[in-house]
Image (cartoon, rainbow, N blue to C red; front, side, top):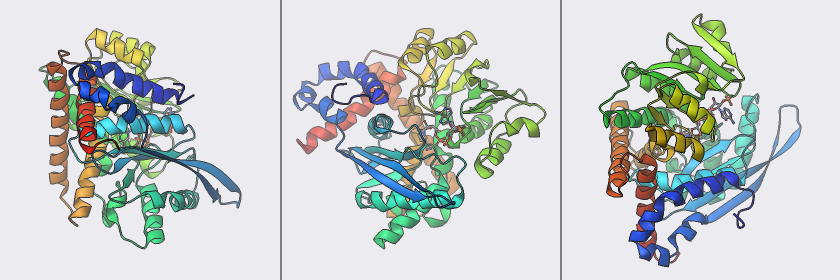
Length: 433
Ligand code: NDP
């Protein structure tokens, strides 16, 4: 804490991992000798830079850009960029730290990093978004490369932003280096299913958790928070798996639709028109918009937080448990506070931590890198099949690791231990670097 003052989200993420890995350290004194914990908590490199840009009226703005290259023991730094006014060092570091273990858990050859800016894309024109992305990449490009550091999207960064970022990278380097960014459009080196991957992956993960208890999504009332990339494709897949999604949200409130959320309409409003979720109720008679309230007050059996960090505290978790919630899959990163996790654990709720449940996004990014490296393009079906297999293996790895360490059903411990062990083994082999 003294070494990283004020970075509260980073402290929270580190504490959560350290809580799980005491048992590993007991078994592996060589990790302590090599100071693996101290080394994994210190990013290999942190870059902070100025991002100047001009809006449509000619006014100059200055934002702050970040890239935290956390750990490259398993492969190039890999992790998204977040554009949101709340972004500062503590958020980027918590996300980067989590990313290291998440990426390890996928079994794929990717290290961990994260980046972003306190730029607020809301209400900005296409031209302004492009101006910002070009300025951001003008600094960041010197730190990237398909063998070095490969960013993707996160909150506020989707296909449009990745396109502008890639265009500027290509222009500055004079290289068509497809593998330097993932989440690209399909027309220029993107992968099928990358857009859908995080949401689909979370639905697959929760299906496995339910199956491990001889249960399924069938007919289950499901609530999803957020209405962005992760939320939209989570809802789509849950519906295909026969779940009944009744609510989703944005930062202004939530939509309740007892007939089942019309995902196409949410997509139209949020993805294509870049509008507000409140408009849903104007266009669908069964939909009701509840302003300035938390979606977790809606009774459900499955809860899939897919908006942002710390959206389920102990209080919301208690409401969910009281209303009969049996499974939670974290589509977002660290959406549940430690107190919330404790409430779920004590109530016996199947709890899939973000590190495991939302790993489908980065896993499919790694598949995009594979396709770029071999100048290949896989079909929609084949790529989704690969994603499904990866999510099953992530689930099984968490499940069996938790059993091995005498903590059956504790996916948080399973994910932390399995991810940490893989990174620790690689770091030991690479020597003191
Ligand atoms: P988007 O920007 O597409 O959507 C974010 C959604 O969450 C929007 O509905 C937004 O509402 C809401 N939201 C964001 N910040 C807040 C806030 N502070 N309070 C309330 N609501 C908020 O982002 P993604 O869907 O890509 O990301 C969502 C989460 O999933 C993040 O935690 C991200 O780290 C995580 N994630 C994303 C991956 C990906 O592949 N994209 C991969 C793995 C994890 P509004 O429109 O009103 O701002």
